[in-house]
Image 1 (cartoon, rainbow, N blue to C red):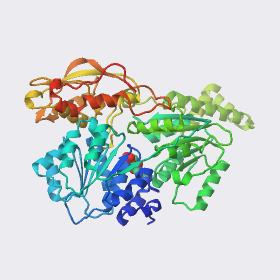
Image 2: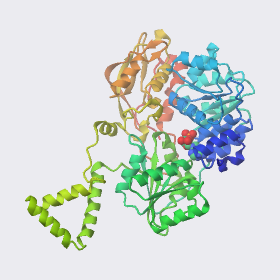
Image 3: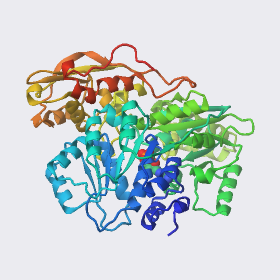
Length: 607
Ligand code: AMP
């Protein structure tokens, strides 16, 4: 087995390196290269990094490299804001630990069976990934002992703050062993997070990936919000209607270069993969094929595509978002060469939207949103292409064929149009000219995208919900009554946490909460699917089932944030952040005198 060469110098354990080469990572992302040596050396670390930069591996790889498998007590504790992220991070650990025999990681979060968690904890686990509330519960009960803990990781610390977990985090950090290393990752560094860092991090190494600005002229940049449609389907639809010559598609792993190239070939494109596993000679030969038009599409990793200079590349598709803005600029620089115009398309999942804004700033250009081509557009395009082919065929010598058609027409007493249509029908079967109407769920999904309640894929597969600021649209709210109130010692934060985790709903969507004695009201986006409402009915807060009941439209809405900002203005400080810092769970806890209310600031979002 080859080793993941780019990782070889970082000092990771052999087992972890083996897993990496199997997974297909070629080189560490900038945040990984900067963090791994420090974490391996046992230093505390303060990392400014967002989702999509590879930060999970930045802490998982070095902590796994230091795990003592013989000691079945928790050695690493990762705190994450939501159950979704906890599960994702636990899965990542499992994946990177595939060569560590007997390794156990346990995700723990509210809403999942306590008895299961207790059984697993008893059996012994090396890594715990949990939401702060549930971790604290276990610590208090004595079912989670942290005596042998080596590292605590705070993942998406600013998000945990927004969700009102700051008190829990402080409590947990107070109870960790003194010598325990702390790694804090956050996309932004609001004051309370800085304070946590000052209090609990000893001489931390600050890791920040600076991005330089660069101009990219002659390149039209667009992004597609990757929600509701599978990325591969989206890509094939785009390739159907875009006028392209040569295309380079960027993905993150070697494995995916091959997989995607195969899938595109199967869909009728001439595509090839290029990655760091291939010899220089083979790489050059493949690039030559792109140059000569033998292939049209190259599926590449960043490493393999460095410096490619092929004039006919009209499009660069960022199928996986790059880790940093520099990589983006390198990637799209593969098009728009030799004075030609270029096109760059970026797929952005909701959770990656911060990177999109960072790229806009770095390139000082607005990246415009694009819709996926509609069924009608694809159909129209196919018919046009067909007509072109027909035009060409009309110039051929058709005498003999004319004769067959004429004979057939007379024998069957059919018109020329009928025969032509029947021939057309036969010819188009591999690539239909008339596309079927989308099925109902697909239609619904498209309509629901802006709200974030699309047809729900299995829980593990779900992305966290997009925030309202992705669209900039205000969201209508509905008021719900829930059967838990002050009498049950409930705090607004408990309600936010339970609903956010159980309904898989970003806290940004949870509106005004008002506590009464034996019930409360909470505003949620109008039109939640019944299944989500049913699920929420049974969710328990302070041991009370919520018994969610609609009280009709709320006189409330979640304001949208502005559309993509013009570059040059600082980003990441939308009204939403301030809104939640001042109205989130944390304040709800200490601010009982505010009547136990949680409010969105109304009116114009700042930003
Ligand atoms: P994260 O920022 O941790 O959410 O990671 C984002 C994605 O990047 C995940 O799908 C990882 O599997 C992938 N990833 C992380 N590190 C690397 C790497 N060095 N090479 C390729 N893909 C990576």
